[in-house]
Length: 122
Image (cartoon, rainbow, N blue to C red; front, side, top):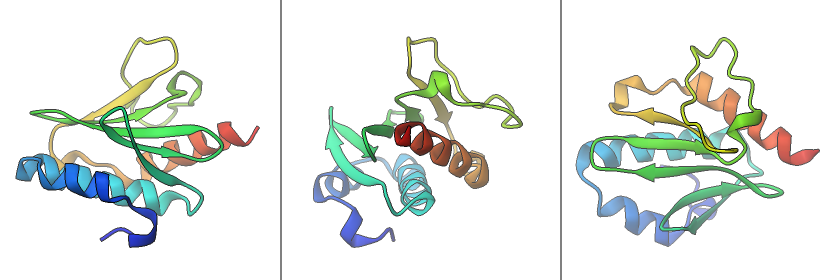
């Protein structure tokens, strides 16, 4: 389980109400996010988990058949060697759509999360 001091009850409650397969994906992604940096703070905003450090970094958006791992400044991330995981055509936001827990790529996601944190340090 993720570090209890860095998780919020609102997010715990959201996760508890999700279908099992989606819950598994969200818990895995949450752990990857929190493990990627001790600087990240979990918040419950816009009805979903958001993670911030010097501003918004990433978010988890559960849906019926997938979970989006989204990046608020995704358009600025270098999706190199990452099999072009990022999707989306919004002005700044990009996301990775995770349909199955087996599809999760911890190293690639951690790298993108750390890069997103670095954007907020400048």
